[in-house]
Image (cartoon, rainbow, N blue to C red; front, side, top):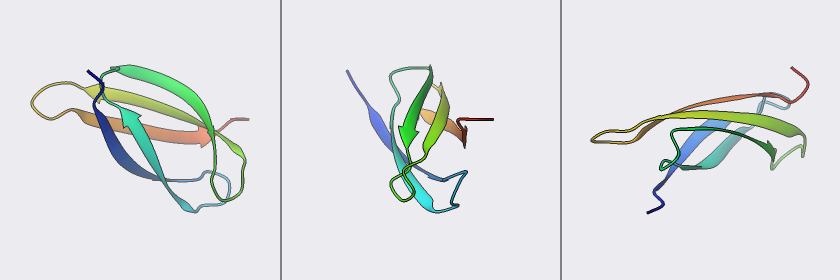
Length: 65
């Protein structure tokens, strides 16, 4: 079963707020997504603490970091 949560972050390039849809059924994931505002590639890393409430710890960094 896929469970998703909406997380808020900021683009590491332009600083604009972004929303990320995270699949909390995967405990660790890393993927590249383009910023909706400036279209630059961001690396999204996510660790999900599975339990009563699947808390997602999300970090966003520049692809060239």
